[in-house]
Length: 358
Image 1 (tube, rainbow, N blue to C red):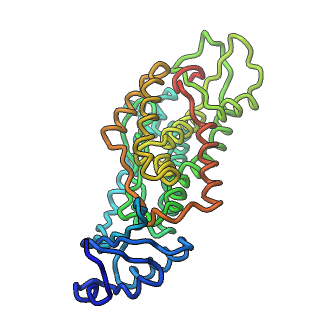
Image 2: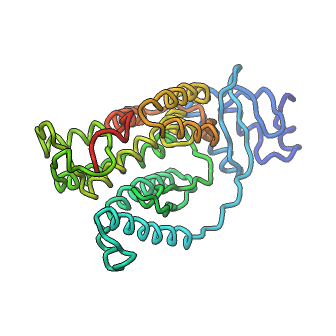
Image 3: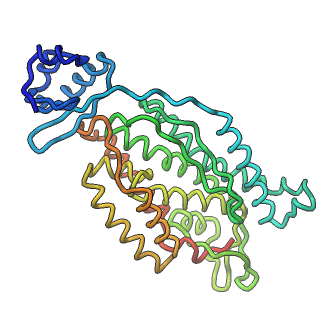
């Protein structure tokens, strides 16, 4: 590490001078592209001013806290990736086809013998595409509004006999600017998806029919709290020996709640992981092992939880920091964190496959 002055900075060909930084930061040293020192108070104001200095110099900068103060690491942004929108469009069309197929088969149709019966699957297909699409589009639009380079949704047309798809995702190709942006990008998908899923559940449960338990066929499903509340509102006092045979639209709504809960697990780079990192910072990598252990223990309720825990570990529990890891969350961000917790409570069930039948 070397002590700095303005002449040294210019002589080494850096895209800025220390003179530009000194009104906002007490610079004590530099090592390559890493500047060490202490940013002046008030911290948010001076961090914002330093961001403008680096932006004017044509570089991006990471701001982080150190044991003795603060550090800024700067570099040039990677080139943007070429968009191949035809891939997004093809996967979307294939997912419509796969969900139509599964929806038709699960309502008694046989599109292999009678191709027109494929259209019997449209209530399920439309509902699940609406739920998944709204979730991912909310991520995409929020990310782009906050200056994050994100792709349009990629749907996954997997001919799973229950769903016809393994969901959808977007790819983030640039660093997230702030912890606030992490919260807002992270919660936007589950929040919008949840709000869209509610009327889907309501309509689907309205179309569902009480049946005798002895005649009920299919896989038993556990009821998240919000699903149970809507069911009790529309079908109160089913009584002993009665069960609820879910309409395909209701099943799509149930899947939407399940996907929301799964995405809000506070691990890795799931939506819940984004929010958790914004709250706990780098400490979250260690704390996430508690969540992994909890998922492993919940294997007593459903063997899928240990599987997802293993997948999370294989994908990695570390979370990349935002460019600005210093500026604290705002009051609006904290309210969104509270909304995140509320949605988890309303959508999570320890035994997803356990009581209500489809």
